[in-house]
Amino acid sequence: MKDSNLDSTVVEMLQCFENDCVIVDKVFASCQQRECFPRIETDLDKKTFKSIKFKSGFIVPGTLVVTDIENRPNFKRVRFKLRIPFEVITNEGTVISKFLPDISKDIILFMPDARDEFEFKIVVETSSMVLGQPIQTGEILNFAVGVFIIVKVVGTVQLLIPTFGYCPEPDPCEEFSPDNICDDFDYSPFPDFFPPQFDDIIWD
Image 1 (cartoon, rainbow, N blue to C red):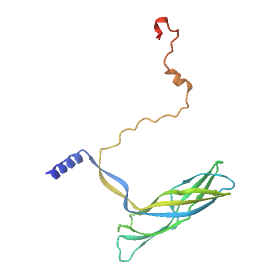
Image 2: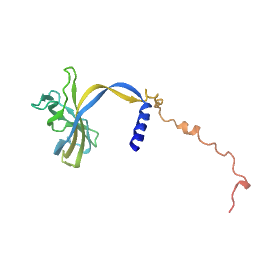
Image 3: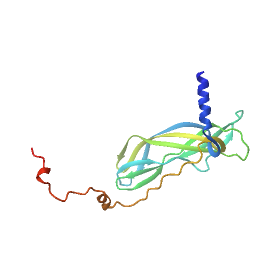
Image 4: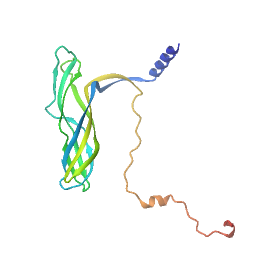
């Protein structure tokens, strides 16, 4: 009885939706990995270290190779080199742009058989962080880096999904304008112009 009530509730909820066809990038498969670099060296060129920022990793152009695997239909061997940019910011305002060492990947991913015209894309996402405390010795900065990696098989498809229709109109954009010292003054309470009278003063 309880399950039937739940099913009827779900049906009622679905009836509130419209059905729309949308073109989206569908993730057919994904996997995670991690890499650790215990020692990265950067020449600060007579500057002093302030901070490190990482940018999104990317597949090095020309390194992606996808091949069939014997006796494993719908799976592919995927090989590529992953490159992750980073920036060292100094206290003097200088930005030193570098790359972590290239990461070689040789993995197996689900990639279903499809018509020749259908294209699968290999997409990578990275999240990099400094491990421990960076140490500057003279002009050389040493630090360790940990990298989390997600590899995805993505294909553009048409999906039928429930929707509420088009999105509502957004709020108006906020216009940028410099602070005007008179703005606060316009809304300030009007002061008393005359001194208090004898009866207005609270005497102890």
